[in-house]
Length: 409
Image (cartoon, rainbow, N blue to C red):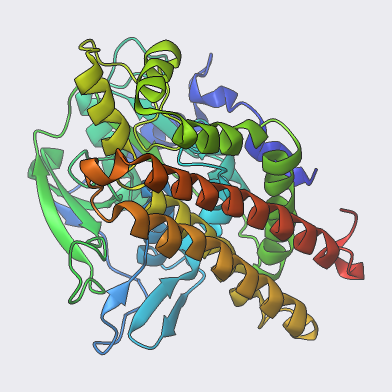
């Protein structure tokens, strides 16, 4: 296992510190020496997208978008890639791979979000990163005024955005400024491509009032010490893809594929009873069943609604494995043919979900179609092919990593 992957999987102890995080001490010292303005907007250092480029993404995973927008806006990013009228954010691709989201075996919470958020940012060169909560029951509790002061410290002193997830911005956003001494926050984001098919390639800003509540969390990246080079990122990322796929196919996560496939092959009554018993919807976006009303009708509705976005989430995950190997080419030109083979294979893998699985139940899922056992059997066949494609992908990456400069697999 690579050193980077070991760090990602380690429990981030300082998310619940026994001592005051260093970044708080830094902020307190800064506040003593600074008189922060009543309002402030952080200068935009992002790489500009040409007007002829109309589409940004696809990019729906909030933690990856937060990382990508943060780096790009603060001028610390790894650049954008323009492909026709599409913009592909290299920062987003990196976050997808290093977080493990791109290789997740099924539609489920990524192991690196939120538990591994700190570890991931530390790997990207931010050793002082810290997360705080408005929930007073958490050890990282921070009251409203202190949180406002921390936001001002990050924006005005460190010259970087902060991250405060907003339920209305489900694909992620960053805070780039404040007004009225922090009572109003200014946020920056992109609309998801499926919400604005005409042109989502230009960022938008908005204002948030009454933002502090019991569910509020604040993530501060802190001062960046050292950034990984793109050469090292692609080298280590290839090892991570191998390790994550190996865990999916040969180890602890293999059962997710099998449960997803077998679940779809069950009868309607069997599926309902399965979910009632396990509190889990295999293969579904709403994976945890926790509703009090467990009538058969409501459980069945939960099952088919939870499969609405599965095809999209899984297709876009493997799309970014494909993207990662495609972007490597300029740094490893001697491996052009091998990289093209990997890129083509993961294009095929994502297409199993993006067209074959999706066409069976359409978007959004049609309940009467999903109820058809023959349809679900064909969906299960897609899941089987998807697992087999990941297995083949693992073998290909394993062979790829035998090249001398990749080190030990």
